[in-house]
Length: 361
Image 1 (tube, rainbow, N blue to C red):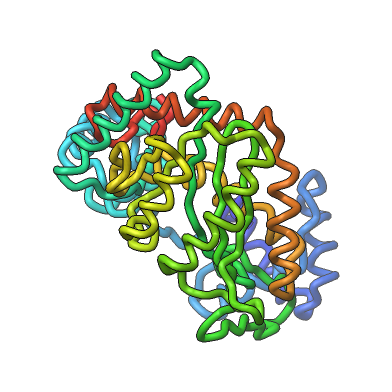
Image 2 (cartoon, one colour):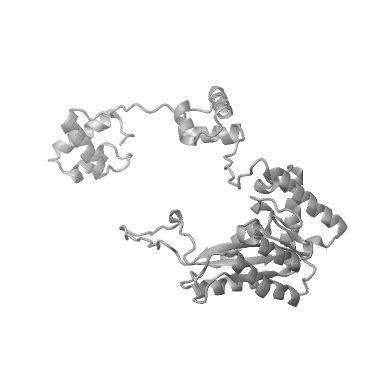
């Protein structure tokens, strides 16, 4: 309709009334007048007649258009100055503040200023007193490596984690495509069933999993007595069977780990080879980035054990056993080499966050 001239518009309305308001006759009459023009559609004729009957005119209505924002030098300079002053402002807010379209702003940022939208990385908060302890640990393990080139192949690094039966449900990833809302909900129990599992990671093998549970198979809180029972009845026999009697042992500073009785037992099992709070060498608190269970094992397992959606605690435990058994010695050696690399990065950053790991520089 926009391609018709004002004379053609008037002619169509005139022909419509001359032919008794018949759409077909109007089309034929128009074709005789303009044989080279495209055939008029029913909609075009009706809209023109309706417009004439409503407004008394069949001319095109002029509608002001929003002026297009352009990538001028002035706009580029304005965006550059705004980003320098407020780097955290969102696309939408920045576009509104500068009077630019979102598309223009995005092209200026990427094509002209060559900027990228980096995400903030979330990591464990370090207290001022943590950095010297992290640095001391990193220097200690590096010195041990100089004295014994096989040090990283003779250390067990341990931790516990909770695995809930339902895992976690991210509603942002749950979508139902249908012609109407299916009203699906996910029922989450107030206290989800879980298992509490301990593992010790070494380059040779993973000792574990060991589940802290009562006789009924229900998860229980880890206390000193239960922790010592695990060390005596599970960890030490596993080490003896696998020829790991001369290994070092690392643990974090959880109360059950560092009670007087627990430390006495550990010193008996690992003669001057305990890295722990109150141990032969101090383990720095708030340092999950330095220990393989935290930076590798737990995340790896949680990405695997829920794939087949276990429905019972025995199924969940079986999945944990299965996935641990599938981790190869080659993978474990690489993990322990990574632990050594992280210690070097810790030295590089004077006990601070491992920026080389966080941002993969």
